[in-house]
Amino acid sequence: MAASTRALRGLEAYPDNINHFRFRRANERAVDLTFTIPRRHKSRRDLDDSIVQIINLLGQVRKEMIVLAAEGPLGTDALGDLVQEAREMVQGAVFVVTRFYHDREEGVRTARQREYAALRQQRRGCVAHYLYHTIITIRYEFAAHASQLLASRDSRVAKLLDALHKVEVQKLELVAQGGTTPYWE
Image (cartoon, rainbow, N blue to C red):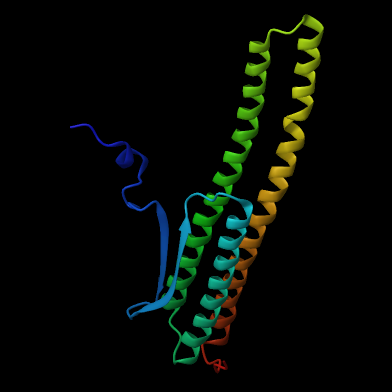
């Protein structure tokens, strides 16, 4: 029996087309810090909303790490589990951001090819054809679009990686202090 396309692409782990992350303590109950990363975003605003939610969740993870340290002797397993879950979530979000911008880049190429095809069907004169072809080339000049898309993508990825770095630094601080930090709300 042939394998399904979903199985070949590794999508059957996510039947509802979402990435779901649940933070949990080591050997204890699950912490109620969950977030679902949509696999596709329709606009940059939706993408930014997801990024803000992830950054807020990573802030809650840092608070949870402080609570864990204040409860008693600090086990590095519990901190390691929280940090590993945070890393996986950020890696998934970076993948989604990269996919979003790859789709936009592909959209620019597709729009340019559609305009070229429409120009070929119009059957204009030789000079008019080359003039319109040049206008389309300038309008969809890929280097300008690509640099703008890359800068936008890199700024969003940097926000995510900065939030993850804060979680990792928090872990190192707690391990260095030995877990005797009092917890204040």
